[in-house]
Length: 215
Image (cartoon, rainbow, N blue to C red; front, side):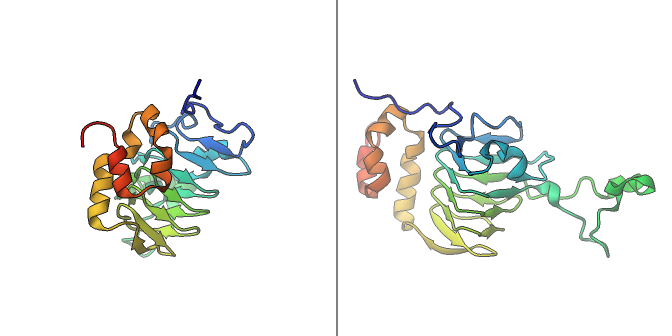
């Protein structure tokens, strides 16, 4: 009898490797949305992802991570709550220190933000990459280790550096359009399981032929 696909609701998909957690069954914050099988790898405490890796997350902006994303150790998301005023002589947030300064709390509330931070499907974020507020990273993108992502990343782009810059696209525009159209990450899990070799090592033509339904 063939083995069943892995269970996307299991926190540790590999019991022998507790450093790896699936994020969807882990996160509890209503401000974080994660797709199935996206994982975080950390030898220390991967279950602390919400507090150690998602920083200054006071809302209302959301962090959205797609399906089948691979997050290396130390990946951080800096959210809009980290913003300070920059329109006056000082950027220091005096009111948070309390006392009489707290009377001016309105000076640090309602600061303009860049909106939700959105990570597409099948994105690989390398070791200690940092994603700044409001960034959108496209499907199939790769972020090199240690990068600081301050601007949007196109679908199937490879970026690196501080600030991260586009190194190249993984495919040409025509193939990227086809990959986005077939959206393998949305295939039924049983069909996806049968096509793993094609998804991992095939050509775009192979993947198009393997897609479920009429083509």
